[in-house]
Image 1 (cartoon, rainbow, N blue to C red):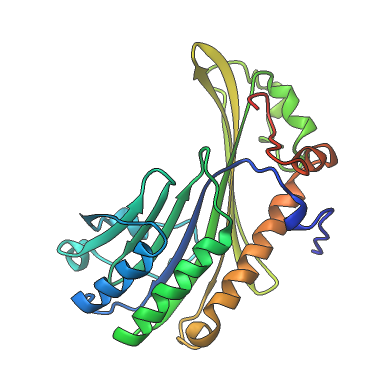
Image 2: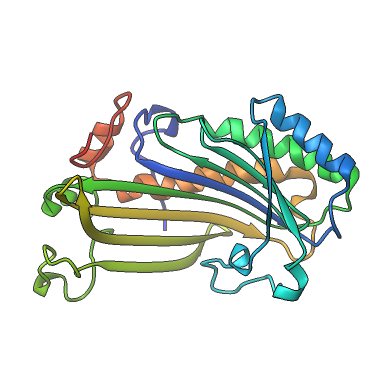
Length: 273
């Protein structure tokens, strides 16, 4: 499958992002030292991310959409493990670090920071981990969730290709105006030596008393190395590749009409612009 974008990522000024999740999973480091925590906090602080809290790990932290889960973490192994969370809730940035993974989440509301900001954070934090801990990276991933709302669900066809919104085999027989009508699909596959998880959800609800239809698209691109070789020296370059692949697949979901809409600064899709 060859993907040729109609416009470059830099020319897509608008967006429909809900959140961006960047994750690095590594071999258990037997706990992070105070010196490591201080180094990571210093990097976040320099970028205005200063609030702190700690939370216990849960089994759900290791659940994925991957066809084969590379992790076999039991509750007994994590019940006494805590994550350090450093965050800026005004900008929606959350940096979470523990002996199993690094997780950086950006919630997109009114504020959107270019992905290079996250990439710089990852690079700085991994540098500290490599210096202070015996870091062996297992998996790197980027997951982006997009969300669009429509007052009239038929308008979705002007923004997204038919193969993306082919809700299910009973599509023509279903009355999508009924409250229990919804559709969810998940696909996992490989492309250009990268692994991809694609989730599409179509459902409906009410906002301020008005009926709305929602299309939720989640695309995750990731790579795995059980031999701890690929990511030791070029992990940031790998993230650039993953981010480019993610853009290619997102752009592929759009119609030509939607692409034109998103060329404009602050361009949006759907009926709530």
